Image: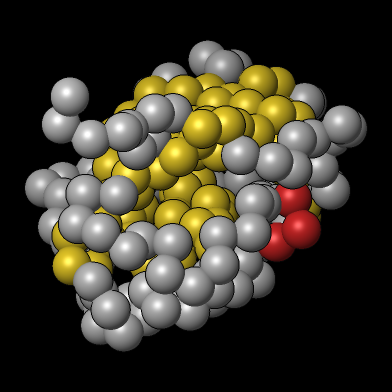
Amino acid sequence: MDGVFYNDLREPFISSDGPDITLATTDKALYTPSMFPVLGGQYFARIGKKMHIRLFGKITTAATPGNGTFGIYYGDGTDANGVLLASSAAFTLIASQTTLSWCMDAFISCRSLGSTGTLFCDGDWQMNAAVVAAQNGLIPASTAVVSAACDLTLSKIISVQFKRSGSTAEHMWVQDMEVISVN
């Protein structure tokens, strides 16, 4: 055996739908910091430490939703806060759809340590065909790179966020979330 490594599903677990998030032209956090496990300082304390986040939810679009984009941040969990680790390409949302399903997976791994550490992020997303013509995509949209400097000594979280470019009020909810320490 080359070490004791195991997958560890982390609490808290969701017992009801997350809050109704009204989307905007800037990134909006899809879940509150209290819905995410406490990682504590030094969570990413070794090269290769990896986390998997899986989200499932619903989205409602209005008359002019424009494009949508997923973004994944390392920060305090509030809107557009922290270091942007990766984002999807913009994809065209279809107007006037109600509470249709979406899901996304993200993998975050440590590439360097300390107060100027770096993280690597990749993943994918899927949406109901009635919500977006291109039903799935990769995160990031092009060649993945390591993040800008992240202070990995602090207690921060990974925050999945979403923005739209349109002029009407779209909504998203997280209905299920798994946060797994992969090793």
